[in-house]
Length: 270
Ligand SMILES: [Zn+2]
Image (cartoon, rainbow, N blue to C red):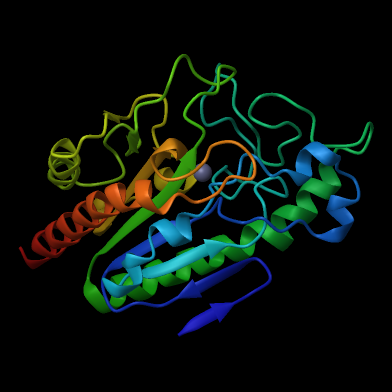
């Protein structure tokens, strides 16, 4: 069953696993697009093609929640009060006004004011989080536990945000607070057998979704995976999906999700 809204699509699964893809969206409402410039229309900071990369998750019985609107409208992985996720570091905000490399997204003087940001929060941010909250609650009620996998991808080199090239797989668990420690170990063990480079709670520690919803004491375990886009796509416009590359990373993703799911079930059976 798929539940559609202007902001998201939610497909319900049969397992205690929710895959959230908050930066997949590429739509810009016409009134907002009219205030933006040509840089915005390239949508370069999108987490491109993650629905396609994780297509196997539905066959595993996962619920899948995916955003339709661009992160340039409002960032679903930022706290509603607009606080920085990484105080002291360069990062984009709740309603970004710049791309990751620092180019302006808006025509001069057209940046969203406080009232406009509040409107986007209620109209575009809130519905995604309401859907996430209720789907997690449904899963938790049905299975007694839930695994939330927040899926992201990013350009592998962004000098304004981090030095050098990012490791391939960047796991974030709010410095260990958002999921069971052994669960994370299981996932890292699977990832460690792959050819990909790994870091845990490095530059990316999990955004608002991981930090807010991950409550291992309540049997809700959240992991964010920030992945280099070089693993499965062309990082330059028009950002094509590259099936041969993707075929190498998909079994690793599947293996991580399967072992995490098995571990969450085991924890719950205790
Ligand atoms: Zn992302």
